[in-house]
Image 1 (tube, rainbow, N blue to C red):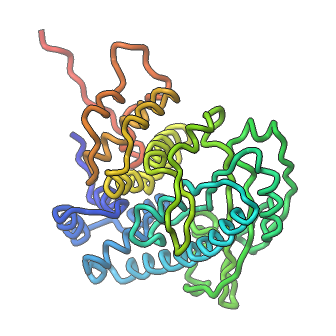
Image 2 (image 1 turned 180 degrees about the vertical axis):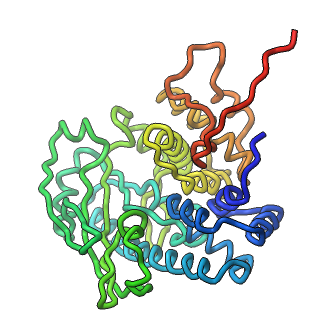
Image 3 (image 1 turned 120 degrees about the vertical axis):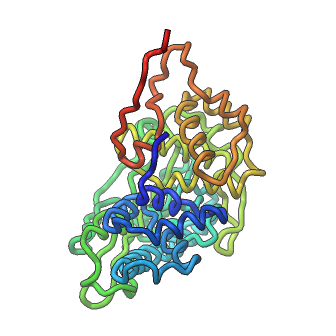
Length: 373
């Protein structure tokens, strides 16, 4: 049994949107204890769960229970993050309308789909970019349309707000080798909700990509990734399975299916944690939200078929098992049994063990004893 610290407990509770009454009480007790708040905020920034933490603190009327400078830091981070999200969603509407106009099939995925599916307010779920799936055959038309809307390939510099364009050519070879086009960027300027002197460069370089100037404006780069697959060599029929229309932000848009969002989020969380050291507790909250809000729409047979076909059963097993233990959602026991790695077979190359210690950056060595004879 691993005993979590109060800081880890708060981070795990505040990455989820739905908490039980018992978890609310636990959340409040931890907040009222002696916490290492700089550590909590540093981790929450990395996980991009600060707005959701602010949501729970406000919902439970606990803001007065924390140091005032911590409350101000959380407020400023959330305000800048949400200003960026508003601009991303404004651009999303323009992009979707443009794709419909040129009759390109598409669906939303990753953060932009999750924010509008499992969160009561999409601004609670920060996203680095807008992710849209398209058919490979439409890549050239989509690139031209994006250019017409003011997007370009290139690099945004958060130190001075400048954008350096770079030409990126699409070929059939590049579409086979990469699962997305090179990122496209458009920069917009809006009044900053936070004075420039209170915005650290670290925010603008990493989690809240932007540039704040002394004139009271903030330059926000809108990054768009047009995907042609979820990962190389995946069957497009599996990629597009179940994607359907939903009413989001006042208009009808096509979104990845809840089942697709679940297996993809869980597998991506696991792979990025172990292969790239990218710790996304935010996506653990996404998984919990899908299990909680979309439970009637989940196709477990489809998830098992995808897990077997693409060899991602271990990643789904560890993430879904811990989501069931630590969250509010429920996974059928039979599903976990079929996903569980078999000790009597050759080890799976994608089996790196439990994901939660990795997400928490916990150096754990389990204690063992030999069998008593």
